[in-house]
Amino acid sequence: DADVTQTPRNRITKTGKRIMLECSQTKGHDRMYWYRQDPGLGLRLIYYSFDVKDINKGEISDGYSVSRQAQAKFSLSLESAIPNQTALYFCATSFTGNYGYTFGSGTRLTVV
Amino acid sequence: QKEVEQNSGPLSVPEGAIASLNCTYSDRGSQSFFWYRQYSGKSPELIMSIYSNGDKEDGRFTAQLNKASQYVSLLIRDSQPSDSATYLCAVMAGNNRKLIWGLGTSLAVNP
Image (tube, rainbow over all chains, first blue to last red; front, side):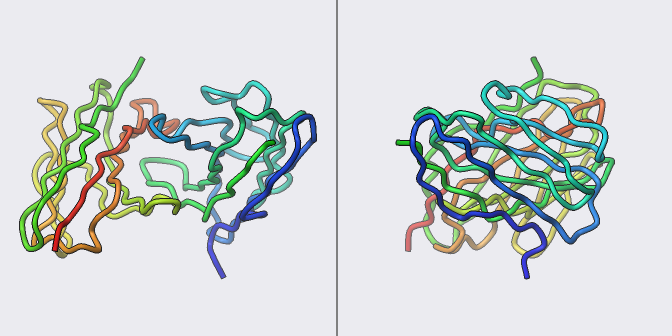
């Protein structure tokens, strides 16, 4: 099994629908992150969490919300999806400190 | 605004050659530096981390760090077609709160 698991892998949804992307990890990491990636724009941070009670906005949090249900689970919600939220979404995890991140396999989201 | 800059490429090298990928960063307080490889449509994969000035070698990969010049590079020796990917440079912000990412350099290794 993957260390960082994202579900679903692919999703097509309609404008205005609420959608949740889920991330779970078995690495014992305390920090978790949500990114989106668009061609030419690189990885952009949406939200990050240092523990269950420490959640922070990233550079592009508008239109998104998150929930850290447990140390191992971090969910991203789009309250009312719009077409420009069509992107590849990645969850990542890390230990506290100067450590690199481990990424999930990604969710390809299309909003029509 | 703390930044990490990379040439977007594409960088094209023949099979067996050395590929050299470069990255500069603006935050002088940064202490840790990472190189990720990302195949098209896949997630980034950590291939090298470096924390001290100088060179760090791992197989065909060598990371080089020069904090005075705020420069980090990745050398890939004996490049293979399977090395064709986008390489992302990431720098831990000086406050250790999160990574700052470059936009990546696309590498094509031609058989």
